[in-house]
Image (cartoon, rainbow, N blue to C red):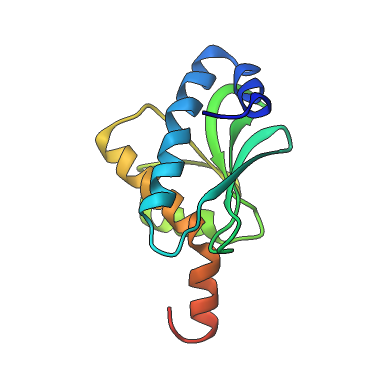
Length: 140
């Protein structure tokens, strides 16, 4: 159950957006729990959006749930634009997932196929630092 602060951030969104974001939230925790090397997540607000990051292990980068200011009823998952995660996601899922700039992909309607792609992208974000360190040491 999200804290009151996080719950208010979700509730401040349009109903359609809130519903989809609340569907994604447990997926993020589930992927974290089932991905090797990922510690429990910290759930905080960053820029007014629910944000998730494995704190203890420093294994990954922050994932934020929210919307685009230009399309406030369109749910999306954001990652830091300083990473190459969206490039990685596009290489794997271009034409299958919809992207927005260098930091987000649109969370379209749920399906088994898009659910698998979403879970994979979440896992890539939550292990970003591990993979980056592994590449730097030649272990990736």
